[in-house]
Length: 358
Image (cartoon, rainbow, N blue to C red):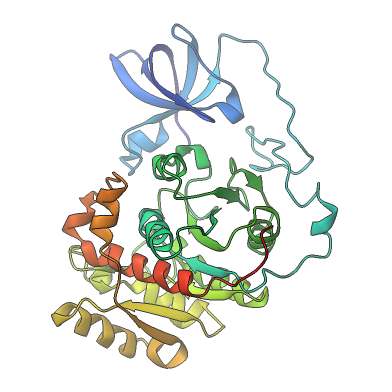
């Protein structure tokens, strides 16, 4: 059950579209909280607020932040959305964010992405590696990030995406399901991919959940299983499906060492189509381990494993002044994780279809 407390805004730390970060006093001194302004409006120093403290009390990986639920300094707040499609439906924070589909007549019968490559990743932290690799191999490509609702729902919470947008590494964002806050809102993964291609003019779509992957240490109880249906949607819409492998040689958990069981299960069980599986050729025992893991899971037979000499992803991060961390580890401590994502980006860049400018 959720937990709530009341307090006072002491200081505003940071602001950007859709998000404020602040210090609040809940009775024990300054604590960190964020405000999703698209849902509750902004706050100012001195405002009394109701704060959801659930995640901090549970010790979840949210960075130790509370969430401002309501600003008691106002009696009402209203900001009409652009359409009638509601996200967060049937909760007290449901919002009429609208959807791209309901406004564009061209979307009524659209069901093709015209050969656009779609990279499906299970980790939000792998998105920068895919994007920088695409940009390195295809500098003029338009890249769309499509955010699922498998983890964090507000796009505004992603510092990564904010940085990638600012550096010109992502050109458009689409949020679907109950995820919200993208340049374009969509209802389903199918329509989100069509929006990315036909409305945003993307040459490549990177599909991944927002921050905060969910896992339960069970075979099927993890949100990264959505990679399978995403890849199947890409195939159904006439795109090129590219699986981004989750690989680690720094994660101490056996189920994630080498080829993560998240990738193995998603590709073995949840992906019905035959897809491209880029394998970063890193050499030595690490590459041998991943090849063995792919064979053991039957992925080498069910899908098309593509050997890739991956771009120097750490150099790409440095060139763009990106400081990427995953599971609390800097990219340099687990490079194969990001080489796998860069390999997926390189394959996607190689499959960009030629077409006239949108």
